Image (cartoon, rainbow, N blue to C red; front, side, top):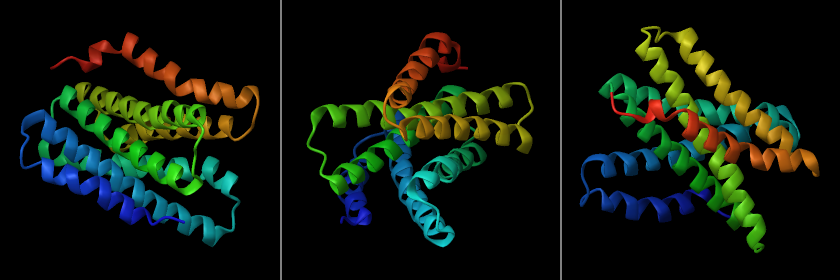
Length: 209
């Protein structure tokens, strides 16, 4: 058994100290990375409470509950950033990437420490699958929010629609990897394939506006 709060402190303290020595985009990325780790911890609290209160099995929770909670927790700092700073499109994507990377890093660290994963192939799959999945969902969400702003339709239904897409992608991944065989292989490949697709077809969204 590990205490996730202790893991968070160990990772966060050096990053917080680094803020004294960096400026500009590097500082924004570190702050978003920290926000992603905090969002992961809060999502674990809420998800664990709902799982215990509802009596659902862990597998059912990962498919039906976790995607909703985790994507909402990742969205909150993005919306705060939008409301307070109104960042340019490229800066919003960078901020979202930091949140996704921080969330994935903290989740993977806690998972590896909890289950003592010693198999390098397993660790690689964990990093390339779960880690990239959180990253891709945030990039897609940021692109969606930028499109809403660009076409002047940044309203609650639009934000909810972008969030629903991120939730659906997350839930699809969790559902696929919940079963062994071809299903899990497809699930592990989904984040990498989506990341490559976003990079190759969505370069326009990464340009400065």
